[in-house]
Every structure is written in C-alpha cells, then in structure tokens.
Image (cartoon, rainbow, N blue to C red; front, top):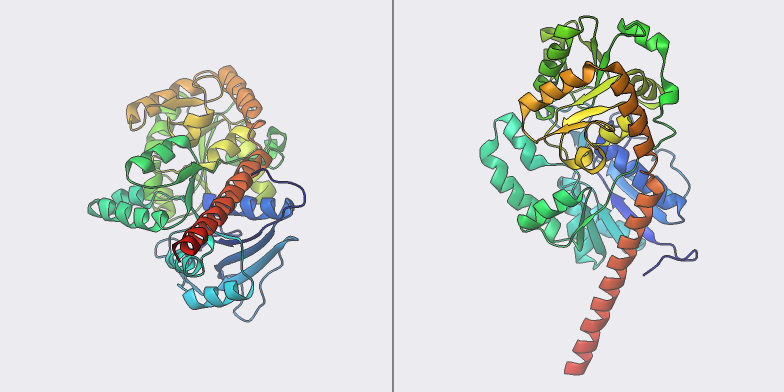
Length: 404
C-alpha cells in the first residue's frame, strides 16, 4: 500500500529511553517520532519521566503532531541517568480506549514495553516491536554468560507476540530468524549530515587536547561500559602512541567504566557526555575513530563519525559492515580478531594523507544515508502491517459469518 498525501495515521510510540538521555536508541527514537510527525502523522509518545522532570510538571513541550505521556520509572542499576518504565498496563488500556491508535510501536523490552504489548494485544491494536539492543550479548560482559540462552528465549517470546519486529540490518534479521524470531524486517538508520559535518572542525578544541596541526587525535564516542570492549581501544591506542608519542586519545561519553579508565590511564582525555554543537565539534576535530564494540545492533556513532569525515576502525558487522569499504572510507576487520583491530589502527595512523582521503570518502558515503529515505521505508512497513491486520480481521469475520 503506497502512502498518499491525504493518509495520516494515529500512532503510539512506547520507549523507555528518549532525549535528553544520551544513547543510540534514544537518538533513533527521536528521529522516528519527529520524522513521522513531520510527515503528517499524529504521534502519542509514552515514556518514563526522567530525573530532570519534576513530578508535578506537565509533559514537556514537543514538536507539532507529538503528544507526550510521562509514566513512572526507576533508575537502571549501573547506568546513571537512564530509567526503565513501570508496567502501567491499565493506564495504557484506559488511554488507548479513549484515543485508539492505529498501531503501537514498542521500542524497548522493559516492564513498560511488556505492559504496552499486552495492552495493545488485549485491545486488538496492531503492534510493532523494535530490536534495538543486544541484551543477550551484554550478559557475557557482566559475568552472566549462563543467562544468554534464557535472555534470548525471553526476547523471542516478547517479539513474536507482536505483528512485526524491526531490526537495523539484514545480518541481524538473519541472525534472529535463525533463533526462531518471526516476521522480522529491516528498519535502517540514517544520519543528520548537517549536524555531523567536517565544517565543525575546531582548531581551538584540538589545542585544548594538546594536539598541534600534525598530531593525531584518536576518538571514541559512546557508553563507557564493559560491553563496549574499550580495553581493546586502549591497546590499539598504545600501539599507535608507541610510534606517535604526541598522539592523544579522547573518549566522549559516560558510564560505569569511566572512573576506572581515568584511574588506569590519566593521560587519556575523558571528556564526558557531549550533545549538540559541542558533540559535532568533537567528532569533526578527530583524525581516527576507534570503535571496538562487538555488541551493537547497529552503531549510530559509526555513521555520525563518517558524516564528520572521520574514518572508523571497526569490526565487520552491523553499521561498519553495511557502510564501510575497507581502506576506502574506513577500515573493518574480522569480528573478534583483536590482533587485526590493533594492527589496522596502527597501520591507518602511519599515513595521515590516507587518513584524510578515507575521511573525505566517508563523508561522501554519509550523504546517501538520509533519514528521509529511512522514514519512507518505515512508513510503508507500518501501512502494510495495518492493511494486513484489516484483511485478517475481515477474513475472520467473513469466515465466522459463513459458518453460521
């Protein structure tokens, strides 16, 4: 079913993370909500109230076409600043009984997400779930490897109760289908090439890092957490610094491992979380992006770095596999090969001219990653799900009438 200008949907979006929280899921949900609203759809956004929002306050302002509903939440242990929503099943049923959406998109598999899926199913509303975080992979980094299989089974049960599960890459779709997930489709990712651009490069910021024009600045942006394999990034940087003593390593982000890294490597610049224009300047002012994580569903920071003309060293999966051509616009190495990652970082740092060429090619690649293209594809998928549910309901009604 093709969208026409006069078709607008009433959609509910349920997520347990949303800006100003800083993470890839929150960023993706902002683009989804605001992008669909800009395309003429009416969005009900349901999310936990954040620490910065007083209990007595009304829901904060939102773009045209978006109405926010804040629900109670609690902090996530070990992840300062992030919260999960409480399972407000009856509140959601009352809300959707009053103003029934055509479809509910559920982005997270926490208590709020489970309540939303149950409420939508009870009311016969079409549902889509997003697979945004590899929780089963995270368990191995927190001494919980024995729970990997039970976590996969729990996730499969959750997602298979929805009409469709959306994932960011074809590889992850195939992996989940092999694990028994059903009705899995790709919801790609885009990047804002205005917000992330080489025009934000800032010589003053580089000088504050201790970098001259010819010195190398290695960058990492993301959660400072065990599942991000930052020990490997540290090893790669040490290999670079052995040959380039003036090189600097700048880590942008926050998380449970930040204090440990600062203590173990006081010479590193742990800049904390950055947003807006400040984050744009950090990306554009680096020379090489080290991305050692092996637990991503996508990796938004990869495309943000590429848009900033910053070549990326990464493992060959998720966003790097989708967008990086090795030694053309970045470097990828086989998943899990730590030695290859370190050697690729060392080799890339050897040739500043090649680094600049890869950065320019990365920027050109990012020009094709528009959010508008992604949102058009998501929109068509939502219409198809609604159309299928309407057909199924009509077929069931017809069969019931025939049997009488």
